Amino acid sequence: MTNDIRDKLLDGALAHVVFEGWGEPSLLAAAQDCGVSVDDARVAFPRPDVDMAAFYHGRGDAQMVARMQGQLFDALRYSERVGAAVRFRLEGADKELVRRGTTLFSLPQHAGKGAQLIWGTADAIWMALGDTSDDINWYSKRAILSGVYGSSVLFWLGDTTDGDAATWDFVERRIDDVMGFEKFKAKMRETPGISQLMDLSNSFLSGIKAPSGKQRNDLPGQWNT
Image 1 (tube, rainbow, N blue to C red):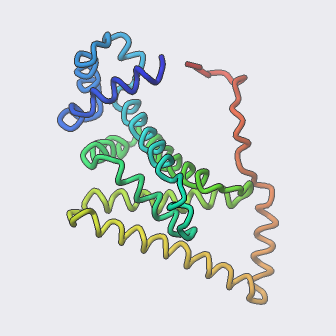
Image 2 (image 1 turned 135 degrees about the horizontal axis):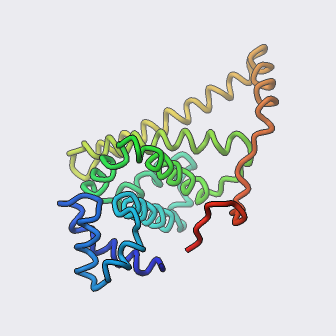
Image 3 (image 1 turned 30 degrees about the horizontal axis):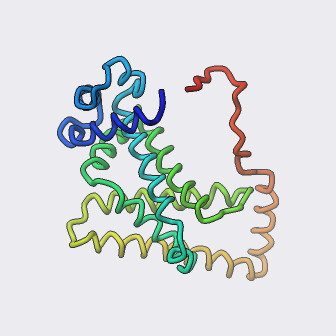
């Protein structure tokens, strides 16, 4: 099943998701609107709720990365680029669709997938920014940014200010908090006693490496489409 079919079905489903939520009713309505058979629609999205919502999220990540390219973006300071990326991601999303997705991924059986999607957004941002870390920093960067992005989404969903101005202020404050913490860590490294403890900790964690990025296809339970 190609992504062209999935894109077509998702486009057709968006108008229905606002009323029906992410699920089979929206998928079947989209199939009828788009002239796609029910069988093909179910192959495209075997779990209509989770699979469609995740595909919509992935599309948003791709659009964000595309907006991050260009001289105007490159001219920003590093912390400003991170904040701009979060803003790009939210500006490209529909609040009601995200609200429906947040409700879906707050369910215990789907919480793991929701966390995976947020992590994926953070990873997409760092990769687009040219992150080359290959140790514990690879994980800490994504964990911290996942927290920033996740809290920003929740704030944005409740924001009623003109142009979501309060959300962009919130994002800026969160980024400033992260940068402040990094400056604090740098100062601690210069403090006698504490610096030795940090060196010991870093030595202990030095064996943790970032994922290789190479996809394994020799494991059981794989389904290649």
